[in-house]
Structures are given as structure tokens and as C-alpha cells.
Length: 411
Image (tube, rainbow, N blue to C red):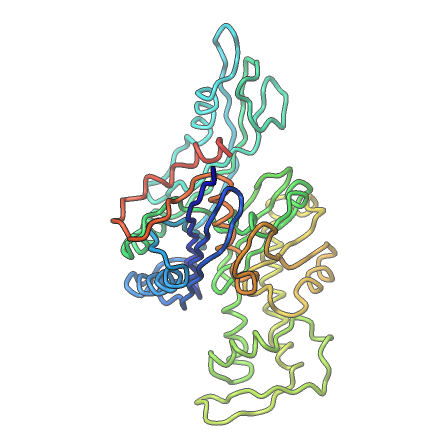
């Protein structure tokens, strides 16, 4: 029997809000709606203006609803920002029953023990992700239920965020009349969209560089080991162009996208571009090499800061699969080549995964990696949102953020 469901991914970023709607029949995922809106209420991934954020979300949602001809009730919502931090932890429980067979309750106990730690009142638990289980010293176990042992251990990756930042995001989404199926760490979602299983197994760094922030995550052995966000990304490049070429911010963004490159040596001295002047009443000619000379130092700074975080965490020599970069900044010409030359590691720009259908010519861009990843996250956790033709009332969804346990153990 065919099982048809609607899934919605909502990426509320610093520079844009993107809402993606997909129809899922069994394992077939078809994107049927996309809505985008300039983000007018966030800075560095954090809500700073509730009213403007709500307006931005509403516009993107309504656009997606109109394209898909559906009414959205619930969504998987991505979260990132400089307030996000992560840590690794472990715990052990004893199996004392005579048969020594590990049950789901034992797994629940050990994960609960791993997540139990003193947290300040201003910190919110977002994810607890089991990476591996260990039974009587045997490592690398993904599902210990049914195995025999006397000692069960778990290694987990814990993601924390600011209570204020999380609750304000939830408030904005619910104000639009949308319930939250789950809050999902954006680097985790992006990884599901652009990383291969082989890369995650071997060891890889994912950089998701958008407008206001760059999300860093390290995967190894198939699991996430490190995640962090730094408050520097594409907006800084745009601002540099505005100052360096003395042009309006909108024009700086346009020429960054159309002519930008981070490889100065790849641009000929004779190449010229037309640039609007301040005030927009006239244009002037500027060499494209000059534009590249403005862009390259900032790209260098962003990447150096990100790779320094990887090195400080102890993973610099544990990423043989290299670096995958996605997000809007990844669209700069020469980005992968620049990373390869500067850090001596394989690099590529993340691309749309296989198995996603519909609107490919629109959503295959790296700028939608998080939104696509949120859809894949929903599919792989098997927590579908029923398709409805009329919007229901929002349900108070904060408690659902702690639904990590069922979802990750079930996956």
C-alpha cells in the first residue's frame, strides 16, 4: 500500500528564509513547493527582531504553500548561530538481569545517563546523538538491543543552544501558525544533503557558509564528532566589496554572485565589470581582478578560522576525505580549488543528493542544502507530517525538541 505524506523543511537563516515542501510516496521524495524571503530579523543566526522575523517566515511559507497548493501545519526547523555549542560525553550502565540480554529500556537508561549533566538555566538541550554503543568492551555497535552482556556503554554527541535563542525562534515559527516537528541542528541537516556515506565514514569536514555564520562539523566513522558555528560568512564579503569598490550593498551582493572569485591569479588584468556608484545614478568600470583582491582575503579569513577550530578540536589530521563546502559562499568561483591549494586537502562543493526529485533546477543550488537536508532528516527518521489542506492550530512544540531519543534509536 502506497504511503503518501507531506514533509516541510524550514531554514531560517541570517540572510534568507527558505521553506521547502516535499511529497513523499514510500521512499520517493518530490519537492513540490519552495518559498524564499529575505531574512529581516536575524543577526548571526539569532533572532533580534521578533516582528520582522515573523514577517519573513510568513512570506516564505505562503510562497511555498501557493506553489505546492497545500496548507502547512508542521515543519522541521533548522537552527544554527553563534550560541550553538557541542560536546562529547559517555556513560555506562550495568545489565543485571539473569539472562543479560540488552533491552530497549537499557539503551534508554544509558543514553539518559549520558545526557544527564549540570546545565545552567540559560542553556537548552537540542540533540543527544548516540555515536556508538560498547558492550563488554566491544566497540562500534550501532544497535545493542538483543545482544548479551553485563556492561553497556554509549558515546554521544550533545548539541546545546541558548534558551533565549531557541525559544525566540520557536515563538516566531509558531506565530505563523506552524507547529514544530523537531528543531534540527543545521550542520546535521546539511550533512545529510551533501555528504556521502563514504566521506562520513572516512573522515570529513563540512563547512556550511551562509550569510551571517559558517557552520563547521566533523564526521568520522559515520558519525558527527564535532560541531561549531563562527559568526563570519558571506555578508562580510559583501560588506568588503561595498567599501572596497564604493558601491551600494545590493550592487555588491550582485557582483559578488555574478563575478566573484577567490582566486586572484585566475583573473586576467584586462577583465572589466560595470559597477553602480553610491547613489545608483551612474556606473563605473572596475577591473575584475580588483574585485578578486577584495574577496580573497576575507575568504582566507573565514576558512582559516574554520580550519583552526577543526585543528583545536584535534581533528585536523583525521579528515582524509577532506573538506566539503556548501551554502551561498561556496558558489564563489574557485572555492574548492582554493581550499585544496591552501590546506593541501581534497575539497569539493556540496551538491544535491540523489533521490530528490522535482524542482531540481531550483533547489540543486548549495544555498538550499539545509532545506533539502531537513527533508532528508525527516525521511530517515521516519517521522512524517500528514498532508493537510487546511492549517490547524499550532500546538506548543517545545517539548518535541527532546524527541531525539525515539528518532535516533529508531533510525
